[in-house]
Length: 232
Image (tube, rainbow, N blue to C red):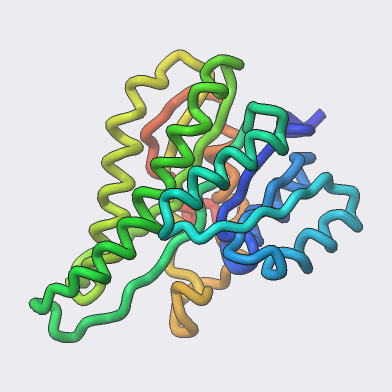
């Protein structure tokens, strides 16, 4: 029997790209899914397709730049899964504009990037962790980025670096609990966020994207590069 059968999983940003790939893969593992996007219409086609394959699916909507909306989303998800979410896949992210004049700080870009890419994942993680710890099992995966040496995209890069710090500093608290929190670097992929010139196909995020969910060694704070497993 597959180890994730009937586990409740929330995937944020599930309507397309990496989120859609992860949702499909979790469905194939037997998970019961909660798919997030900004609107319910955005995930409706995926939800219909997965239901036709026999997957138990709910859809939820929230604007992740609004912290109050994120907290409402968390409460809604808890109600849908009966109080305990098993898998949280914080995939949703926002790429701020490319600034060729990289010395020009744009406060609004930093504020928006941190709200979506850092604060929202932290709020969701902190909401679901207590129940995961109480049941002695849980998987939190925060999607990060290997971006570097591009100050033109510093608002995005800094928000991901802050998320990395959150994961690594939280990791020691989770040792021996049965709950893990890790980072997934999908690589530079051809998605709406990565753009059409990225070298990798979105499908190459698998099977690596499931490595931190399926791992049984209890290790947290790990950086998993999906491209290390591409083609496996």
